[in-house]
Image: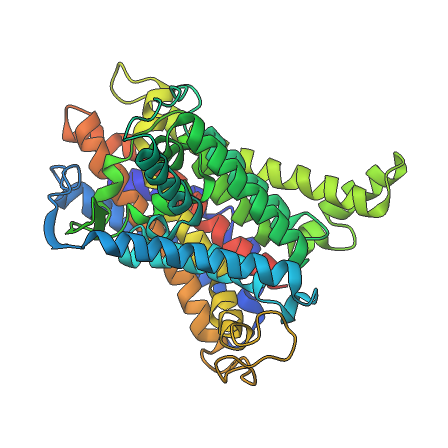
Length: 470
């Protein structure tokens, strides 16, 4: 068994380390040991983890979270958290519309792309679903429902039934749309444009909640609510009905309901981050890169340079999402060869939760340096949110300290996130296999394929880090 697993994983690992070796992770040459050694080291860690799981993990341990209540918050805390979220949303929109349109001097771009997009996933891992507590459109919808109930004496019409086939597809397309704005749209950092898009998104959420119910819509179709909610399932903390519960880390993911669109959501989460790394390297953006060649072809068809560039990047973005989804499905199809009675769709939905740690690992690996450096800008931007020379908190004169962490330190965080994330995914997959398959031997054999998928994602992540640092 260990020999077969090592052979399968080693074959996949061969595809990436040789390429990654030619590039510098985080763009530095003072790395502690050769890059290829870390690539191979990551594959070895996964194989060793797989063997340890097969030998020592003989019964499912994560399927029951075994939560324990440690704290119950007063109702006023919900109101205060919601009000804080609404106030922050209003401030960002106000800064975007009325403040300077210089992106680096306006609060909106840094708040949206750094604090919101990168910081909240990490907070969700550490403290549970913090976004749900401060979600501004959720707070407004709840306040509107409370006010309407008071006016109508508590009798409100029943919402429409949310279509079961729709599942999480609206959330998946919402995250894809946000990634398109961030990675493709030429006006991506214009503060007023971001503010208008934020208002439009909030309006869509309020309409959806009014039609299909606040809780149902927020847990299925609110792109950011679903996105941060998935990461929070990894946390050892769980907030429910104002109660704070503790549980085993990762165990919350075993309770994920695999409704339609869940696999698509994870493919979007991983694929969009992957394309961000790819688009910064020579293979895509070099003089003869894929993106440049595609852009020239589109220009030859009559498109302007800018439009051609956006179309080319859109194609690349969607292609990477499809590639990630295909890679996962190939592993699932391989699992069908073990045991009987398990279809591809069933297995995909039952094992999709194992992709969540990988999605977070990609976020940390690709954006940690952005958070560590640009995240400091909030200190002076909050003091002067409109960029008009104000100094509300006395911090407007602060600057970014690039010595807060070294390049080598960032590199360790990136590689560590990738390895830990994929080991966590492998652990979740093994634990679920013990439930799906009747025999431990079959459960272990089925995970040869998932091991190959995890090694492939690890190698892809290391290669993308290298490609983006060229």
